[in-house]
Length: 235
Length: 158
Image 1 (tube, rainbow over the protein chains, first blue to last red):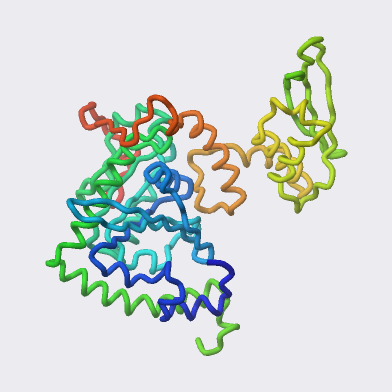
Image 2: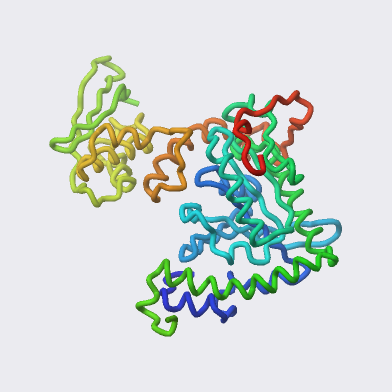
């Protein structure tokens, strides 16, 4: 996927799902496909965690136009084979808000902070709030990364997410502590969530999101890329 | 190794890498000034560092100097060419745990990440390490947990 011009980008995002297969999010409706998103500040180690979990399977697909990195993984849950797409930001943290399509059809969310930097912990509240605006119901967890830097942090309790009942993991992408455990549990929860057909609210939300998404995309494209000048039909 | 690097630094005018090294056999300590050529404020610091590291006339002297350090020195040189003070330049490598890194541009962030990588590489357990366990788990729930001071100014959700 290279050199998509700005004009093309808008058209492809707006409707024609076929032209960017990586971003064809309809596939996430299929039973054997789940989408898991990663959230958290810059440099908390999101990509390093992916790399540690996937090891040899680690083949990130960069979509620089969207500041996005995708990782594909095949997992076995129960007796079923599931294809997992992990969505990671490639620096979009900087814009404070993620693009709505990042959240679209996600089945689980991994929220990461750096135990050496308090600000990344404090910012979890912002990430969580934004997540819940788009995905009120999906399973989510809190991940405290870089415990290898100072193991004493594991004697402390971090209360963010306790009220909401979010599972909490102490992990280290460097020495591997609890990384695989966390990913396996989140994949399982993503699959469980998807198989739970009683979640009517979520479908309604999805419809609303779809509706919202198209509108928002047009706006944000126009703002970010100065598309207004290039595409008069937007006005 | 014929030359043991002792210290490494930069000189702004003319732009050069300064190396203090010891001759392994004679034990004599000498200074070598390596001019950095074809390097401007627009140059790629990482390529320039690599070029220098492999330079036929200098590579023996630079054997004990890491690519990372050469990159850092080139960044300092380039910062100077761009009009940054040495103080600003050096502080850009410094990790401030209070700083919001979300606000940095790609290169600024790369400096911080480069710094963080030092610890990561030091603590890293690799696949070919003899004690490597892919799904290594530690249960921290059993350890006594004290309240985290980060939760003190309790806002929503904390």
